[in-house]
Image (cartoon, rainbow, N blue to C red; front, side, top):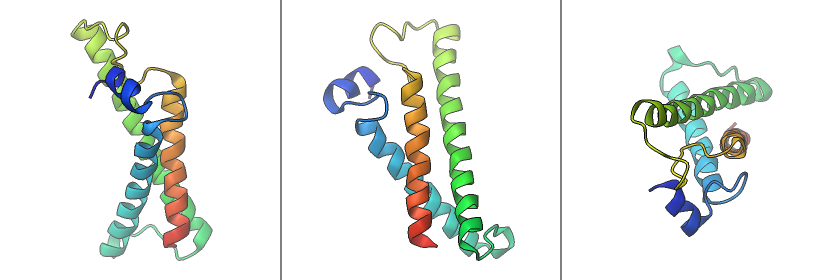
Length: 122
């Protein structure tokens, strides 16, 4: 769904609020849950130490890395479409990252979801 349609219907990409917040908050929850599950399933790859704050920081740091990587991929996708495919993405708002507020909000709520999950699981 293009961001222009999403914005009209659900309020996506309105900075720190809108449907986009729910998506990234839930993605932080799912990322943190997957990380804990993988570390428990494969003990040889386990980076958890059994201490709450160390485990909390490991989980939140890995989710933050995932969030930054995701936003970097969105930036690359926008640049590819504008510079290589020569699409005009600014007239109808079809950018993956329309503003810095959207990008920072996405990362903030992913990390917040991971922090909530880490507190619940650990």
